[in-house]
Length: 314
Length: 163
Image (cartoon, rainbow over all chains, first blue to last red; front, side, top):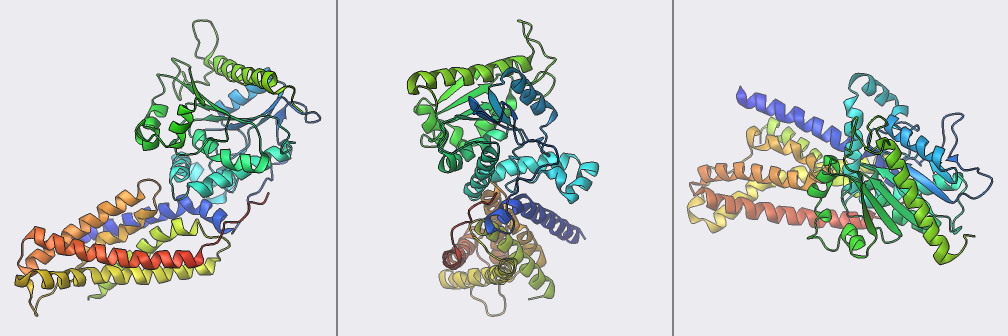
């Protein structure tokens, strides 16, 4: 009897595991096999970019890659606050926030019929699906395809938003949490399609450190001692350990491409997170204000540096 | 072989094939649904057959290297309890942890086979484990060579993304 129960349990569990194994990788496989092509269609009335006037070149394009809560074209509540704050304070930037970091086919989870039912009944699965997508993006067997898919998605979004290849206008990939895995993976594809000056800013970045970021000019790592989720990433991924000297992350670090900026005492999520508008610092600013200030200061400093060394942008 | 064991081994072969095929399909370009299904079914039969051969091979190895094991009446065969965990072979497709989980699964199943072989052949567990390991590695290497050949014959460059 116990043997039969064990047999049924193993059989049932096996089927569930196989179903999940198929589902979690299904999208990247569909993309790879060419069964469906990525789309850039948007809900009616949604612009492809916000911020700087599309009639003249902005100082830089800012692409925001949201955390695992992303499931529609609109940003999540926290990510939306950050994007809005950046747009309000930096009219010189053209901002794209509709990239789908966890969908190689650029289809938001919320737009899929089966997920509508899941969202109503087992909403947690939406987060688990996106977490699984981060691990798919980090797996060496799927990573090249995943990186290529999302890199191509970002390149397409940029071009639709007015970016001209070889224009020399910098592109900044601002990523929050798991978005860092996707942002670092998109570097090569963006370079090959647009040959753009590329800067990365990770906010509590959760990534495996395997991606080659040679074609990125610099990576600014915004972190905090209170961010245990980012710290977990540095523990569980061997390529983040000093021991793996030839990982993409450690090579970039040795080349001086990574700069760390502390945002203590912010946490990764919750009411004291990097993006929290209520949590206050001793100087009276909110965590959201400080994060916005830091991101804009980094971009403006870099733009000044570029202008000094390269002369005016074309 | 009982029908239950045969069904279990076929399900295990399908599971193993799905786990192996997913990462491979990720490198195929323009492959049709029909071709994927046919690869999956072919893989299920091949992998199921390899699983079926494992105890027989281990028994044969034991016959070669352990003089006390030879017996015409008894032989090492799958039982439902021994074969059932193989249905989980699809964990191989899991991102990051997949290969490790698959290895743990195979070690666990191999340990079960070693225990059965030790009982049937009347030898020590470690000797039996050695025979099961040798047979498993030989089968694994052989089928992997076939897989690589099939992948090589089927791989083309992935498509350019279209906006």
